[in-house]
Image 1 (cartoon, protein in one colour):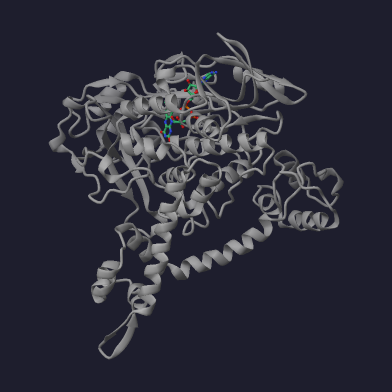
Image 2 (image 1 turned 180 degrees about the vertical axis):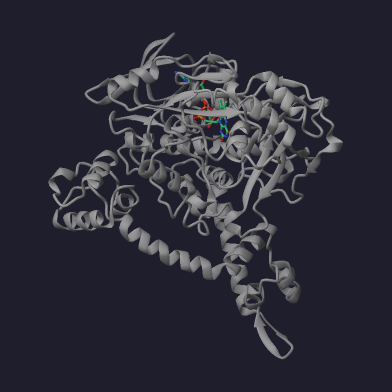
Length: 613
Ligand SMILES: Cc1cc2nc3c(=O)[nH]c(=O)nc-3n(C[C@H](O)[C@H](O)[C@H](O)COP(=O)(O)OP(=O)(O)OC[C@H]3O[C@@H](n4cnc5c(N)ncnc54)[C@H](O)[C@@H]3O)c2cc1C
């Protein structure tokens, strides 16, 4: 008998979700991590969600994951971003108490039945005939398992930089993981080097807040989790602030670029283009001196703040001098400088849609090591790997979400078909069917799966079903209730479709609905979205039909592309490298032309394949 059915390596956001899903689905699971008390630690910003990332968290929650519930419990401020735009863009975000989040993540992992937490370092993975057999741990030796999920974050050969000084670290003050990625390379995995960075932490009492612009939380709070009850939140929220750089700030940075590891040739790895360091902003936008920064509290009783937007690896004194030019931060005391980190990752064409590696059966790669950046992205991959590892052990069908079902599906498809030439973060613009995969309807899209896998309770699931039954009921009532205005007759639906009317306005016309119906704020909001955007939604649904048509044409995993003579040279090379799952996925590969797709389609039609995922 193996020691464990599933071993998860890494207690970060990916590992937490993977281990929780695996154990709660009934598999004997071990979570191996370097430091027990660092489980769920936030390496960078004390916040969860935001544009597109909020959608990911709602999806994780709808599947029965941990991140949404932990966030609600640890939040100090809630805001929905993108409110001025349509509902596809509404993205919940929460400012979080960093230490509290960490603490409750540790507690939560400790209470899951069937989950052992092992504080140790994975040095190698053990394989036999291309199949996973277990892991070699520094203290405990070989521990056997039927599946292993690797979620080692930024720790693989991690190296941090502040100016000219660098340390081998997995993140600030924590040892890196040495040798594991090299061992994986010896097995045949391709590895790459990526980088990311974080801003300095400032002593809150040294900031003159009256010179900054306050940013308050929303009054109508939108929680992430279906499990959260509004009464669970203390009510009062913390305030964030806005500050701005100026020409003096940028001048100091420009003068010291020669000392910046990003620009003196020390760091060659690629960083996240959409989350640039302050030195990169200075170089890329030489004419712009006013950059928005967010002064964000680290927690309820935490003396520090996080200077969002000022990620840097310049020497500490340069960071201090340039920050002192910012209004409100003239006397700021820097408790810890910003730093950059370089780490090993694995190009994602090496995985299947289940996140299992192609090379080693039963080995899964998730989180930062797959080229993503961000807690939410890591967690989304984590829960999918946990579910799929269990399904595979049970001999059941894999769980794959496509681009029209979830942001999680968009992310996995993007990673496989486009790779991660730079750290991948989610954006709403990546999702072509974003009007269908909104933050508000994640539960209607995914809770059913969560329930099927035993991750969402029956009670919670019936609450979701009841909610959407109420939405349908309200739509029905609004269709059948009519009112005469200036000689013309309008149904409630007609009135609601008018851009100037909110659901509350329309309900004013029909007082009997308000009295008789039992429609809460959430039901009314969902009804409003469904009615107002019905035209756009049905158009996207039509597009999805076309999309599914190509997605359902599965390509056998063992297809011999060499035997298809008319493929272009580049197209064949890409197809052989990535092994796209479907004709649709093949069409999204760079270098694969429409002519290649036509050839492939004909070839698939000619053959009768046993199609394997
Ligand atoms: C300096 C810095 C800046 C960042 N900046 C941003 C940013 O601006 N925006 C953003 O979205 N994200 C940022 N991130 C990334 C964010 O922290 C990660 O995306 C996220 O934490 C990844 O989650 P993960 O679970 O993959 O890995 P991590 O959260 O890094 O967790 C990895 C876990 O694996 C464990 N581990 C590693 N190796 C081993 C081993 N061999 N054996 C046992 N356990 C092991 C570690 O102990 C840790 O618990 C930054 C990270 C760092 C370090």
